[in-house]
Image 1 (cartoon, rainbow, N blue to C red):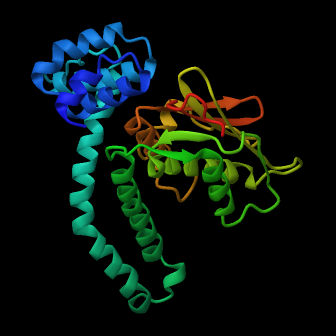
Image 2 (image 1 turned 90 degrees about the vertical axis):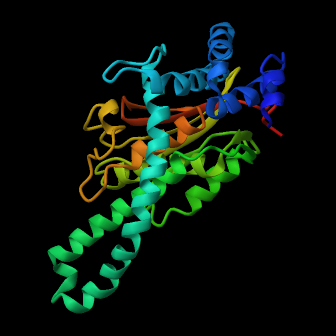
Image 3 (image 1 turned 30 degrees about the vertical axis):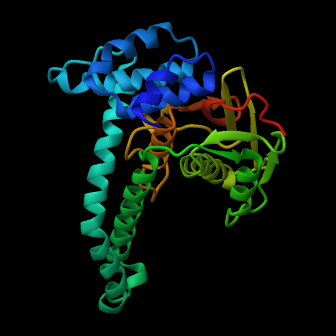
Length: 297
């Protein structure tokens, strides 16, 4: 979309056309657009369009904010997330370029040079380093500018479930409608959903005395798609807000970046990730804008 087209379409009565233009301004807004975007944001009634407009406003406002002062946005967390996403993409790419060859060399040479390598601290440290390198790669995907395509959510869920290496005796219940078309960045949505599914399966893996169960469902409201993964595991051991931060994990041997990257992926799609304890486990939910008037074929 060109700037001229965006300036015309941002006033369109059609919701989808207006959203497309708002997404353009969320990344390409110029200083001269600030007043227009603020005015449009206040008048907009569709939450996801309003969010895209707010991101554009905040990107313009952020450089002029004094150090230590919060941006003027009604939702400062979205401002911080937008700025953070750009920084993460730039920094992670540069770091990976330098350290990836070194990690590969270590993994290739250490087994031959370190006695009893499999039981060594060296292997454990290299494994942790490799996990953090993989987290950096995922950061680039999570924070990239999304490419929205029409995808079948039911098929994506089925593929991810089939790809799980070992579900043991866990019962996976899928209750969403078939052939459910959504507009999303497939890589970012897959990253977020994979994390939720993997966490749920790990949570119920050690269940004793009751049947391990994971439920996956999806649907839509007037303006958004939703998908949840619910497990009957032991529940959250940390507050949800804490678990969504970088480097925080309740599991031994995990880098602690999975949930924060899943959240970043949804923020990049201008959606959201919700995590909360449930009465008998954990509820993981994704929400993002619903483009299709009739998503069920």
